[in-house]
Length: 324
Ligand code: A3D
Image 1: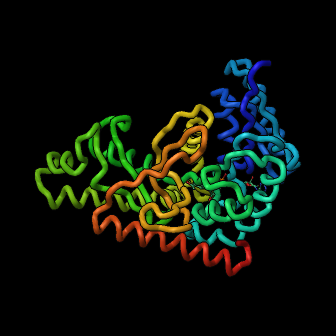
Image 2: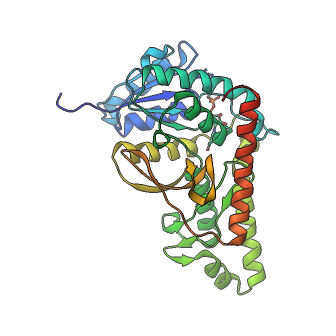
Image 3: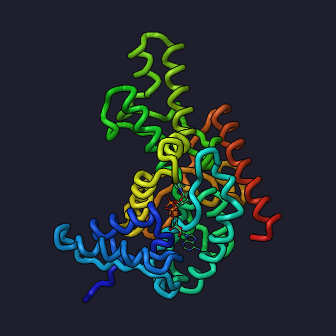
């Protein structure tokens, strides 16, 4: 073989990890290893996916394992290991349980895949990305988190449904921390360049009603994860998170320079120093190649800073617990 196929380590072989294994294989993103602490389950999932290779016509390898050695020399690690929330829990309630898991995984990624890029999905997202970067000591461009792609996709879906337009034409951006304080940007939401606020005003012919509808969409976006948790009754969303992480993985592996919101380390951008938060970035072969700064008005900025305060608090908690 002339070129090396990328090796993707999916760490956590539950719902999101298994779906990612299927997507990476069916779309031939690279050879995939699905790692989990459970001894046989991921072997079964991987074998099941591999046995679809004839009908799906893919030629990459997919394996399951529970030994850390299996992630050796991975180019990209996507981390979903840990507990998902149950009805009534918020994401921050997972901090203690998942910090222990992420710390161990970070140490093993550092050992076995020291040159890899890492996309973290485990909640509470911003804190787990912070911990992953602190544990591995990898440069900030190689450690990032998936949340904004999903939150923005949810925002766009609700806008498209409300306006009766294709979601493909909706651009919507959610910044800040991945939690109840996230910031869907109303002013920047548009349908192929036409402001959503204007379209809502034209639909209802009344500014007050248009503002109320927009407000409801924003609130639904902020609570979208909880809406799914309640409906599923056991576990949290997995199709859309897997899809969002896959898009980011593809952007890195194919050097696409996609502009997406991601949880990235801020060192001066947006006036924040030394904290991870959801911001627009350029994603390519160097991981987070650039953080893009956009002008926020007074209210947006206040909301963004309040949202970053949640990350500041979580980072403090990690310090108190002795993890960083
Ligand atoms: P689930 O199906 O329970 O899978 C988690 C897997 O992690 C299980 O198979 C566990 O066996 C495994 N695991 C536990 N400890 C370890 C360990 N030390 N090493 C390796 N594997 C381990 O959960 P899921 O796939 O639905 O969700 C995974 C995580 O993603 C949870 O923390 C969710 O809260 C989070 N999540 C994040 C988003 C974002 O947008 C950020 C969205 C949805 C879910």
